[in-house]
Picture 1: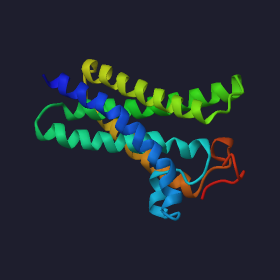
Picture 2: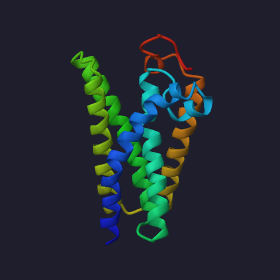
Picture 3: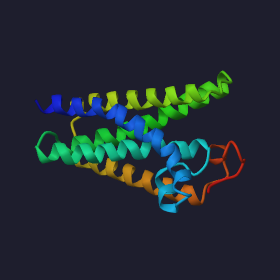
Length: 180
C-alpha cells in the first residue's frame, strides 16, 4: 500500500512539475524582475538558468508530497530524500543532454523541441525516482549526501544567478550577457 500511494503521487507530480516549470519561465519578468523571484526562476535565457525550471518545481513538489505522505505515514523519509535528489540530478542531466545533443549534434533550435524535451526530462527523472524509491536500501550516509546535494544545488543556483562564471552554459543566448 505504501508504494502505491508514493507511485500515484509521483505520477500526479509529472504534470504539476511540468506546468510549474513552464510558469516559472515567465514569473521573473512578470514580477518586474524581483530579486527573490529570480532565485527560483530564470533571469535570462542561458542554459544554466533554465535548469531552475526543473530543480525548483521538483523540489517544491517533493516538499508538498513529503508533507502529505508523512502526515499519513505513507513513506520512508530517508528513502524519499535519496530518490528526490537522484530525480533532480537526472532531470538536470536529461535537460542538458537533450539540449546539447539536439543543438550541437543535430543543429535543432526549436522552442517546441525544448518544451517537449523538458517534459521528457521531468517524466524520465520522476519514473526513475519510483524505481530508486522501491529498490534502494537507504543508509544514513546516502541520506546525508542527498540532503547535501539538494542544499548545495539551491545554494549554487542562487549564487550563480547573481555571480555567474563566464562559461557558455551561463551566457544569455539573446543578449550574450551573464547573470541578471
